Image (cartoon, rainbow, N blue to C red; front, side):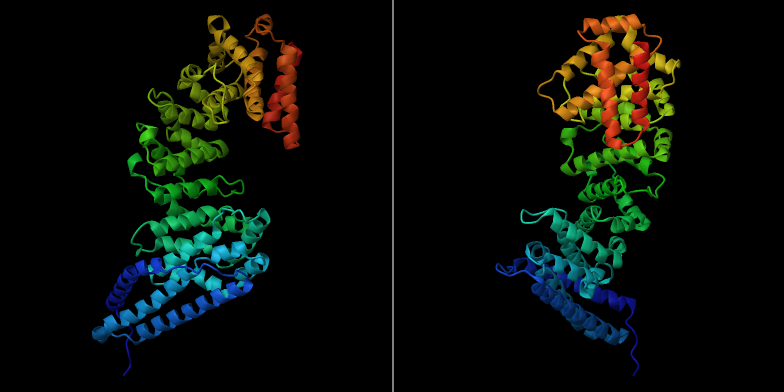
Length: 521
């Protein structure tokens, strides 16, 4: 008698029984004590992979034979069939779990070059990875994913070296590219049979680590629109208090992926900037101390990604304006309850101020008042992300982009000229504090001093500011414009030119300022 293929209903019953069985037996696996003494080398690796090969073959044969023989009339045998498949799935699951020291063995073996070359070209290993996408049992797929996470993680143990890490990533990349691992991970995230978020978190941590791998794999990741859109959807949160680990790692992945210097593709979603602003707005009225660890990581990656996008992409910059990003940031900087909100708003506005249009909008929207109210002329910056650094950089950018003789530029100059040059004198005193600080990191001191010198130079070359007044302010401060401004400005120009090897926008500005100062004074 010709047998019919199993109905969907019958297959579903089998799968439910299998999942139930594995769920009940997973606890047994955690009680198994791993081997404590073992020699790790190419031979042991081959043994492990051969055992996995046999288990995969047995599991495939068991599933195929039982499901091929099943009929709609076989319900009386469905439980027995499910038990057979469950036993086979569990053996495969446990066999994969028993190889949990695979990453350790590769880390500790002396012949690691041969081991990584072998695993990268081994068909069984690629077949194992394919289970992430195509094995019917979610627990088996998730277990493979857990092993992959341990294998690709970027941490270097004390016994490892940078050379070993380079070999590892180079060889594994060849394997991951050939089997299109990003697509396998995308398929896993589409599965509807995931019972919890643990496996999704594992998948996302794998993706984060893969961003550190060589170009050939990174290029596949950044071009995998379907995968990245899936992760993008996972970034959306309803409130600051509802951020999950899935949200956290999803945002971390997008940040690491898109801010990589190798990214020339951008991002397929046209509303990414809008979504980042929406996410950030959820934290507008929330105290930092009340945010969960997941929420903090999430919002920090949101800030980093948004800052990067608005500073490097004209399209994102324009979208930032259209989506009222400036207005949201000004709401944040006006917060009287949280310095974190103030700093975040200024950081993003500093990143966004990349052209005349934005500089003019910022002045028209009233940025000057909070900027000058927030500068602390008595406090040295302790790191490159200190609030004063952002504020000084914003002022420097406004001077750079606002047209000469424009009303907006005049309003900026007036902030330094009003009340008998009160803020100009404060800035000069702050320059002396920074230049003579003994407890300030040298790199940070040079960077902060360069920002201050640039602002002073912009003020000093403007025709609206009398030469005599500038000279008097320098004299009253115990400084000379030649040795304390013109020469340091030229030194900064030479340093930047040496670092880049060619003229760029920043060096051109410094050269123009140096020439204008030399001509006027």
